Length: 77
Image (cartoon, rainbow, N blue to C red; front, side, top):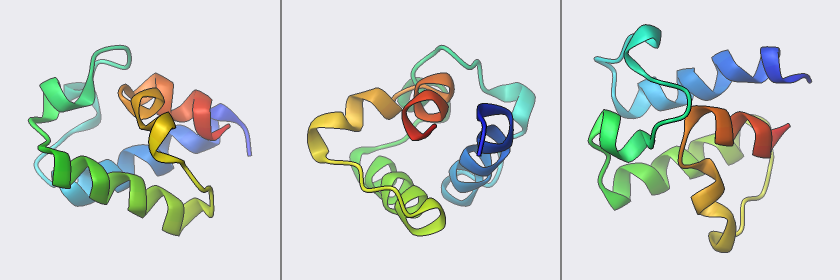
């Protein structure tokens, strides 16, 4: 799966946490926590959802790499 195919999947998992989001609302290189007002539990749910939908294990030490939309797509790619 390439980055262009991953982006909508990552965004869809983010929308499950914050259903009010529209794709244009998220700047790809800004921290998701700041833009979407995610608390730590929301962010953890996002990571777990990515694991569930894509089957990618993300160790806790790599959570910071999922901090932006672009970062998440690059990491998962």
